[in-house]
Length: 70
Image 1 (tube, one colour):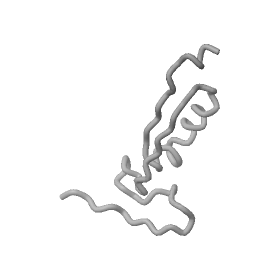
Image 2: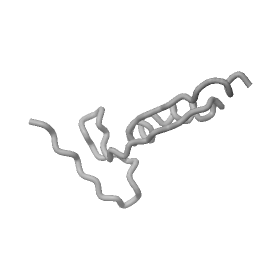
Image 3: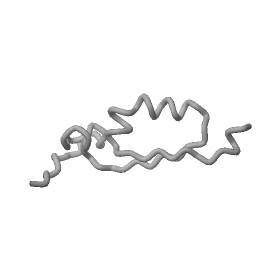
Image 4: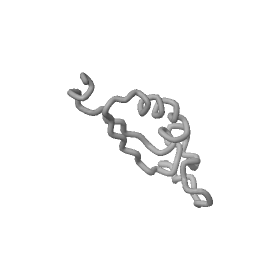
């Protein structure tokens, strides 16, 4: 009852952060019963580890490592 009065928790992250490395955290948040909103950004790369292609793409989807700034 008390949680219904709280504003929703807003979680924003990239596809790799939520679906690869952060799936346990996301699933725990979803299981908590708290009001949440999830904004999932389709970056198609693991931005926090150097830009490798993300495993979160569709099966058979071709992904490439994004270019890096010089």
